[in-house]
Image (cartoon, rainbow, N blue to C red):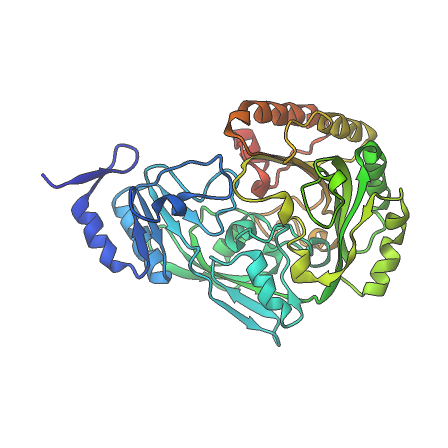
Length: 440
């Protein structure tokens, strides 16, 4: 009897089938126990510890097609990895096959047409690093290590969302391998129904092998933080509410509650201190941005004013220090019906009991601006009418702290239910029950 290896759902793979599959690949095929396997199965969220039977580090489109056909023939569970930043761990699976696209980093920029065609292994930081050389920027990603495809297919908030919309609003076409192994291009004129679905419907329509984006003239921006003591948190949230109706589209901003990480540009005595901060990215003329931000900078005054002119590619790394890889993460999110006084009271009171100094709570102003000028039925992302997105990003270093942090996060979430809209941004979820999926 031929040697077999355990796969998934009772399926056992014939060793001969694996050996026949391996030489069809230009990239690597990794199996449990082999060098590189454990590193390849790690993702951003250290809480995810899944062990696939096979990992295909795809070298190109042919590897993706071959891997999809192999998985279908052998009835394998499939996970697709782009940047590996999915907090629920969708980039890896137990027992099945992982299509790892992280080595596919091709990029072509057309500075005249202002477009960029990118392969799925690129991160937003890598894309915008290269775009910056042409004075251009792509809208998508608050954290630079986030991969392009996962974020885009679920929506694509980022530092330019109010000026230029979601990442998916700037998507011009995708190349995609479907479940039957077909390679298709989807855009407004061909496979348009599929193109509608991938813009907000998530990653279950196929494996995206390239994305073409519209990109924008973005050179220097005004970016950074205004840090206030936590005792001013209610006032800072009310300030956000006061200005949302009047700030221009060039300003993407929000409020963070977090503990100051040990960074050299802040006094040592602030390290570990819980604070509230206004975070901003103004993508317009610097002088005009200074005028728009002046009342925010004068409020308080803040403990620290870290706003300065910086390249957009640098602005996209602003939040990275709050989200280092290697921590255990549990995120949950919803749009708010409104930022009422009662909601503010609840946010501040709950954060005051936060068990982990790595946890951040966010209230983003995403509404209005470019996102609201796309019709509700034009894409599969329909949640365009909400002013605020609320997000708890619980993170902790010690696995033993799992129960404490999960309990605190879920308690916070339950306390916020009276203020939540029945609408969820799918990219910000961890615990997808049926109700959450339907809301998304």
